[in-house]
Image 1: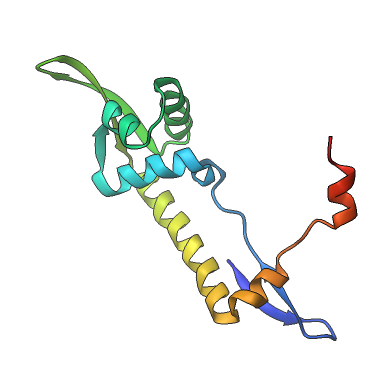
Image 2: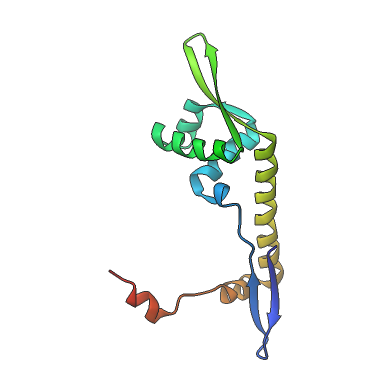
Length: 135
């Protein structure tokens, strides 16, 4: 659960963030889940076009979501032949709702503390470490 608390003698702000679902958190998979959460099922070609993805990219991310049990891949016979379909599962629906709830908690914590307090509380890499890690 995301929370912001005052801590330390100087009254500094600390942000506690739990980790989001790593399967959904990846940008392309989040967008796929968002489309399927809203539409329940869709043709792979429509998802690919809507998200400007390549066939391979969509397949790779869809496979990861399917392995997690969040979506199902199937084929449907249409007038033009077989069509690959993606469908969100009940497990995927619940996982996506939990992910959205996670984001809401972060936003609620940020708005209750004020954006400046949150930004100041987030972990930062010291400048000397950033410079040392440059190639």
